[in-house]
Amino acid sequence: MSPVSMTPDADGFITGQRQHWETTLQMNPQMYGVDPSEPGRYAVSRFVTEKLTRVLELGAGQGRDTLGLLGAGLEVTALDYATGPLAGIVDSATDAGLAGRLTTLTHDVRRPLPFDDASFDACYSHMLFCMALTSDELAALAGEVRRILRPGGLCIYTVRHFGDAHYGAGPDLGDNLYENGGFVVHFYDRQLVDRLAEGFEIEDITAFEEGDLPRRLWRITMRQL
Ligand SMILES: C[S@@+](CC[C@H](N)C(=O)[O-])C[C@H]1O[C@@H](n2cnc3c(N)ncnc32)[C@H](O)[C@@H]1O
Image 1: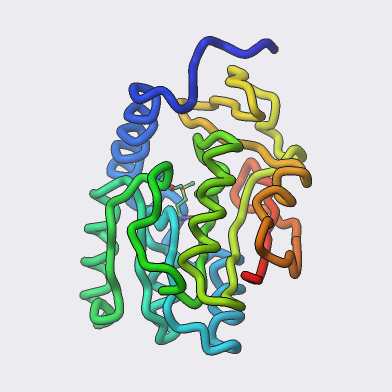
Image 2 (image 1 turned 180 degrees about the horizontal axis):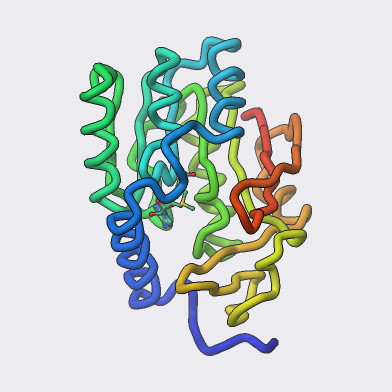
């Protein structure tokens, strides 16, 4: 299928994706469930073991993993460009008595991260790196994550890859971006994982599945050099 005439980094298109996420998450309050995901549980275990307490979560969504990170005693900054779900995370954390260690921030990761250099011990991100972001935008984001992590800090992120059933389905936007059900997904090959690892050492890449489709993902663990 040949690329359609949509430019992922055009302003109108970005706004469209943000509104689509805001509306979809509002209409589906438990879109991904309330229990922590498999990579979320893995991240908690790695961060606690290494005493990495200051955690930045990118693309927190409705917070199924945010609550797990907070519950493990970590300080979490949960970032997303959808505002409504972030407010829901604050409510859930307040109900659970965990809001004291939570900061939320509405922010589009296409922009530089508004944090000081080396201000976090770890970054966790489940399915944000496979959103409507071009390869160049992803490389810039990975560079920002490297900048805000302290030396030796860990980054654990997940992405859908070429083995996913939706890879190649729906309108082809170029750069391995495909649109499905109104959502744009960037599907990964190993080359892109390696490109985003500049300034990091990749420790582990684990394939896993999630959901009914199922989504086929990689969980990447890399350490800031
Ligand atoms: C697939 S959902 C995953 C949510 C959550 N991590 C989970 O697994 O339950 C992706 C999230 O990324 C957010 N997102 C997508 N593009 C973004 C961007 N450019 N900047 C910030 N957040 C973005 C969406 O609003 C959504 O909450």
